[in-house]
Amino acid sequence: MQQLIIVFLAMVVYVGLNTIRVILVIRGRKGPASLIAATENFIYMSVFAYAIADSNNNIFAILVASGGYACGVLAGTFVEKKLNMGHLVVQIIADGDLHLLLEDLRRENYAITNWKVTGLKGEKDMLYLLVRKKRYLSLETKIKELKPNAFVVMYEPKYFYGGYCG
Image (cartoon, rainbow, N blue to C red; front, side):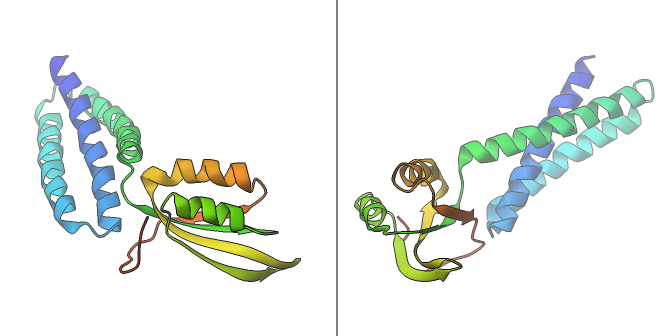
C-alpha cells in the first residue's frame, strides 16, 4: 500500500513538473525547462519500472499512476497560476474618452500606448499595455471601475524586447 501511495505522489509531481516545463518551453526558457525535464524523466522511469516489475500489484500500480497523472495536471496548472510567471498584452477599446483611465494607469507606472481607432459605430480609443501577470488583477479592477463597458482582449506574448514594461 505504501508503495502505491508513493507511485501516486510521484506521478502528481511528475505531471506537475511536466506542465510547468511545457509552459517554460513555450515562453522560451530552455535552461530551466531542461533541468525540469531531467527530473521528470527520472521520476517517470522509476514509476514505470516499479509498475512493470511488481507483477502482484501491476494493475493497481497502473491505475494509481493514472490517477496521479490526472491529479498532476491539476497540480501543475495550480502551481503555474500561483507563480504568475510572464507577461500579458492587454488591449482596451472603448467609446468615449479613455483619458481618465490612461492617466490613472500611467500614475501607477503601467506602460501604455494609446491611439484612436475606427470601429463599426465610429471612432473609439484604444489602449495597448504590456503588463506582468502579477499586476493583471489590479489592472482589471481599474478597467471595470473606470470603463465598465470597455472591450478588453488579453493574450500572452511569446517574445518581446525593447521598450518599457511597467
